[in-house]
Image 1 (cartoon, rainbow, N blue to C red):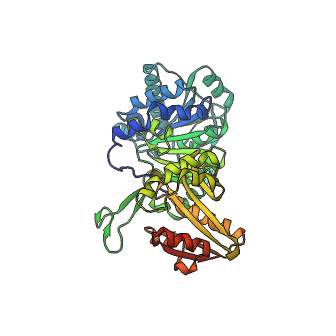
Image 2: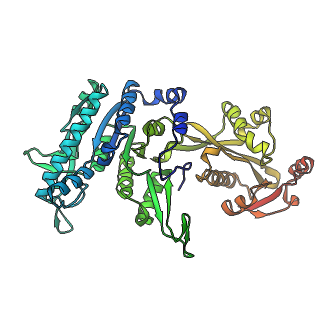
Length: 460
């Protein structure tokens, strides 16, 4: 599991930070890959009631101005709860995942209609054209585990041509959590699931869930000593910043009880979307001003990104990477964590380097130097950019290099470190060695440097 950079769980992200994300040059860098593509954006009902909703509509206007197609899907659970309280009725479920009795269907119809109208009203106020769509064809969920789900439905198909026709005419489709069959019956649906089916059907490049949570949050109980991260006797809340689809699967199986709020539903549907061909799913706080733009037009984002495994890749470094690598290691060299390397040196040995990319951007580098006569190899220049730290990238690079060395017939892998010895021992499972373990050519350079680095080694 990887963790993106820290995000405050209480309160909004400081506006100064978000302004950094949404600078014009940052947006322009992403425009070519998103132009004429489709985003499916799903609002929880509570987000529509939030003060920031009008700002979100302005963000949608920006997306449309960049020729990005937008389809809106909304929930109405918050409104169903409010309406039921006002009418003195008890809904059988709030989010369309359980049994929907006749009373709850009526509440859902009324609540969803109100939310749809409010969204259309907001789009008009932002000079955007919108239209309610009945593009979702549904059928009854039926009897599940012996229980008749009554008016709860499942998506049977999506009328893709209708949605494309609206987008082609610069009209934003607004899809409620409802579906109809061919006989005039209406069924209540879960908006998270509706968004998945629409994103899959239209081959959307992004599915974005706007919720009242910062993202996928793991709520961990207090430690056995009674002292949690938040203080004595308290639980800790950890925002998961980034997950591959495989990691999300594992989290759902092993950490289900720790998923806060609607996290289980969001993550379950995120996995379904990714398995269905949607490359990226974002789960963010819809109450953060400019948060949508910050998530879409930056590498860091503000919430949780769940992505296909192809989102990040390790590859052989190329000559064009040399300058970026030189900039990447500069801080570590200044802190005496890494051996100084000139740009010319990096270019000369570029064939020994590998880089780790995040969305096409250089996030980390590593080098592998072979000493064939001794059947040894050195793992060197392990460096991860500051904003990608604590995401498991370093460990993944080390594992990759180890596999490369083993495949080349290397019997022992070694590395040198002045300040990260514990990291290599704990994460890379290296053992402490001595300068005598170095191949003769490397020992000569070791003695000449005067750095007196700790030698670490690992049998392969």
